[in-house]
Length: 271
Image 1: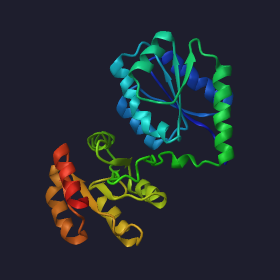
Image 2: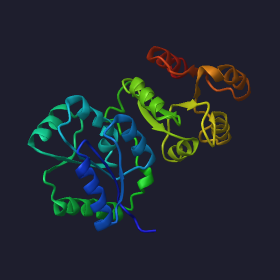
Image 3: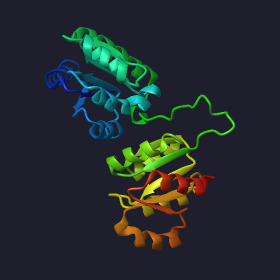
């Protein structure tokens, strides 16, 4: 199957969002997805659909609305995703002032499809030539201070709930390198390419639940020694406690976890 560029289009300018999606699909055959310019749907799509390009169509976004797009920082920093911002001069000024994103392409309104296609074709060609696997969209950021005396530990969070993933990532980003995935299969895929120091594992998930994932990890000699902490709701707390005696994870944390409790538990395990 031939490679097709995957594009996520978002932003408050709904007319341009619609036009960009239609033109990219009809003219170039790209796979396009559009979503509301909100943190949760953007987060969910970049981790499930894994787009190669994100296009933001601005329309008088406020400073807080612009900061919503900072959720793209990790993927852009890793070089796994390109960002285009369609904006007038005032929108461009606001985005430059309030965004933490370090690398992007500005396109002025009215949008020149020729200019947009020219850059998209370049990205598409580059990805083809590199034979880059788009499923490897989230790549670990290589910390330039990795050789310092106290390097940051790497934590993998597995949870099917987007809101929980966002919350935990926000809580831990200050102290750890955090990667989030939404299923056991996605966790196995990540661990085939990367390593981690600890896994925060949701107890109840569709298809493969936490205990099933833990058993599979223990059966693989490459992942058998990774510490596991279950994430559990109050209602299944007693079931988790029973599971502790069977599978011997390193403990559990009741959701929604407070920052102090979560960090304290991780410190108990990792030191």
